[in-house]
Image 1 (cartoon, rainbow, N blue to C red):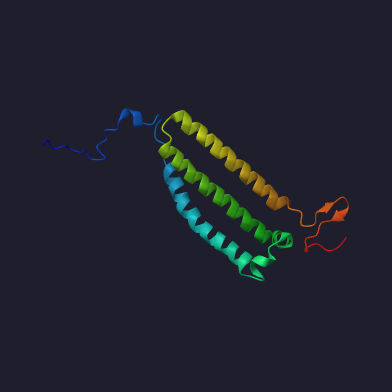
Image 2: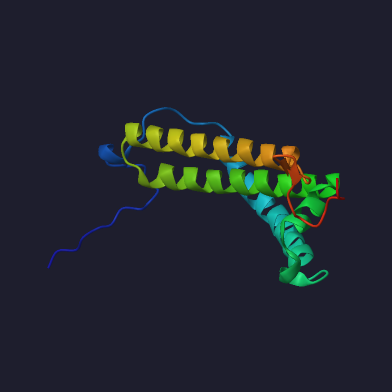
Length: 155
């Protein structure tokens, strides 16, 4: 029986089919790694604060309706809180999926198109979410009648 020698993983010999085109990206990957750790910690605080206010304060889940959201978003503090949660969650998730695409997509063209779709979807969601938070009308009027919501005074 002949002994098979296994090379060290860091020996520098990479099969050409697994080599990536292009040069080093500098410090981008280090900053992306650091962003994932920091945004994860901030997201934990934002999400648990969001859940506590929505589920534990007041009547809990039974109080969540249009009027509850309208009342929260009438306060700039909660608009900024929800905006930060939206932006950080989308950037955190997009960066994670970008890393997965880099790890598992073998062809450069596949990697490029997957990232184009990922960044386009993330951009659309962030833009639409930001618009919803800042253009939300707590007192909608349709055909001259105010919609019920329990937040706005009668016309």
